[in-house]
Length: 614
Picture: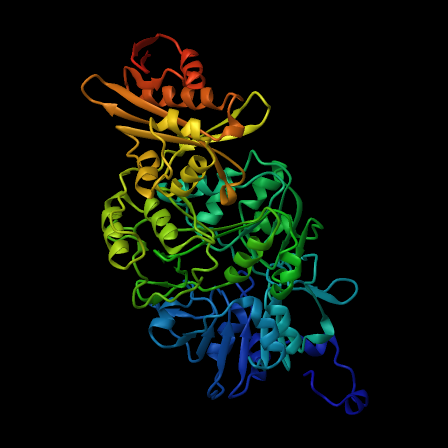
């Protein structure tokens, strides 16, 4: 006990290690009716103590077990949960899902980063903490090992602490130590630490993971939430350098990235889930630091990390950008974990990125996970104001600080093609999207067609396929053109480029129409500096082309780079060549086109009819 009077306690005989050592049955006898019993987290779930508590012959009433993510906290009989206690859980995993459905467990939707404070203030009262720890070191401290998270707060606050001391539990650095004198009773166990591996991602998960990995740069610090896609994404970072980790949880793929010198910086976490190989790696390893979850999520700490990249999952998202991550099919599933804190921190981090992943459809392909509105039974986990990157197997959308119309259109572009017409129709009906908006693409965004090119000036520019959501960028190029360039490009003195006209230059089907944009800057703040467009004339299998480049980026090779990218793409579609009408006075565009091969000019009054054959 930890609430005795110091004066009284001083006259009592000190409790020795031998006195504290008990059988599991005797140890759990400390639990009384009405107690709130905390259960240690994840792969440190104290199964021996739980079994003894469930098997206790004592008449226990209104005992509630409180826990985050566990493995074995709810015993099973013939595949169904059988427990004599009520459970309050902060995460609905495979261990507790059926118990929640049956009413034997209640889900509390809250970020675990808030829990240590609530435990300390007794808004979440803890009478008994049952945990699993390492053997004591020479200074009399045990380590919480693979799970510090909210466990340390519960141990420090509980009136009674009961521990399984397991020699297989790793001794971890950081803030994972508890003085042996703080433990009231312990049982000795010698069982392997619980192992956990994510199920392999399917082909869709792999594709999403590749998209995510593409926007993670060298010298980044990673946060990866629980889930197959964040776990799978780590496998595609093997050509990165100087990565670090600051995350609520780490998993098995960390091993390979450390062995291959990809992760060379510190690994700061709160708990881990893996196999013995991971546990052996973290044991007494100073590269790893395990801290309580409130430290891991402290805003001043995580928002100050450069290039913090947070990768988490959601089950569904609506056209306004509201994401649901803890309900699926109307049932509670998983939990908030520390997702809200890391999404905010990555947004504040210099060079940081906040990424939410989800497959475009349900597993059977019958429903879109991108919805006009979240449905009944789909609570908002992440509000529309805080969602940044959204990635499906059909591409990525950056929707932070965008209008509802821009968010909706960008999300429809990464939805499954079969559902895009419906989503567009619903978006217009709801007033999120302007009437008359179309979306021509019926395929995945062709990310393999992206190219980084170096211009004559030495500057690097990304040339990528255009999207319907590039309208604002296209208009920005137009309004920076000189009047003479506008006339030579459009053959008329245009005063404005309407949304409809801009859509014509970027809303393409990637088959009979193609458009590229040249951009600079990070994806979340990129700037369009040039564009190219073609439309196929089926009568002669030639494509009619047009280009537009901001004045300050002319004469540096950008026009030639766009033309070359267009030629390569057109050749892959087996087109014969390009054709264009160019004003005689448009010397700059004539010079760009003349750099190609098999070019012919035919003058008709004030225009040249130009043909380039491949």
